[in-house]
Amino acid sequence: MNGYQRNIEQLREVASLFWPEELSGEAAKQSVIPILLNTQKQFLGILGIKISDIHKFFKLIEIAELPANLFLRHLMIIADFGGELLQRVNDNFSVLFPSGELEYALNGVPQRYRFQKLPIKGRLTNDRLNASGKKLAASHPLDDLSKDVTALLMFGSESQNPYTAEVLSKCEIGGYVGDPAALETFVRQRYIWVSRITAGSQTNNPGQLAQKYVHHYLEDHLDIPDTCIQAGGHMPGISYTDQNANRPTSFDLVVSKQEKYAAVEVSFQVTTNSVIERKAGQAQARYQQIQKAGYKMAYVLDGAGNFQCENAVSTICAHSHCTVAFSRPELKILCDFLREYFA
Image (cartoon, rainbow, N blue to C red; front, side, top):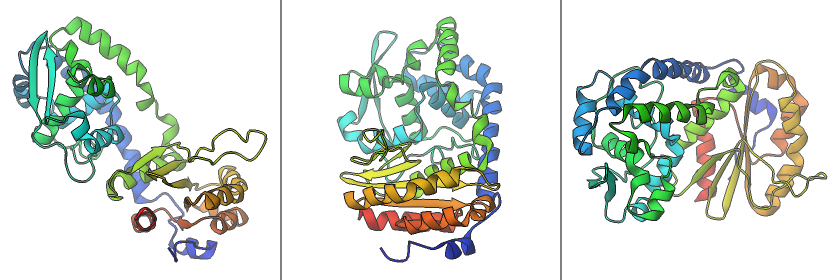
């Protein structure tokens, strides 16, 4: 795995330094929030109509003024069931739905929905469902894949398989279809419960957006079967080395597969602050523990403010298995590094 550990000068040559197109585009995606708020009434109007089976519900969506992909994004937020959880369902589909069908009840009547496209090859992402921020600007009709995900998000908690119902316990809004009063109360409470999705004012800075962008990039491009990518994750046996030695160390991202783990720390700062100094102060101790455990440590470092702190960046580079800057070509290198390790 040679060639992935760079020094500060090598990193500076490929760095973006200032807010790149990737982060500008990610900031623009925040506009999805007013779109959702402005179309909530239409969304509830569709759900408020009583139906006898899900196929008639699909016809309602198809003739409604609300685009099907926007309706699906509403469902994902209400259920708090996004890309990472959908991918887990996709990866474990044969366990959750051994017959290839969802057996559930609607208004007390047994129903059966046969999945048309699930499970799919590759990643089941918002982008693939036309429900990402950049794709919500255009209307996309219901296709077989979005129908499958709609059925799962609406009626998953009603599955006759107890294990499946438990895994999909948040996918329960189908139980309120056709009851506008109960539906409005449920949705109002649910939006409060998942308010972290819309309470994103602090994510409008490059550092926060960079971490989210790297997370989504890895989900979309890593393509390693049975891999978990967790934000704020931990690695077995890796803990703080001070008086809190029993407290697991948190990392911006942890990529894992079976007994292999790789941590990814992300820092993009246009102006100087203490974040890069803190990461540098932790770098050596973390690296030593990770090296001993047989895991890997990677950093995504960029921003003019970070490169003003030469000692901090140099320390991090010296205690990393892979160091990349923030751009698509650089994140491709990170994916190459992770593929080599997990292979």
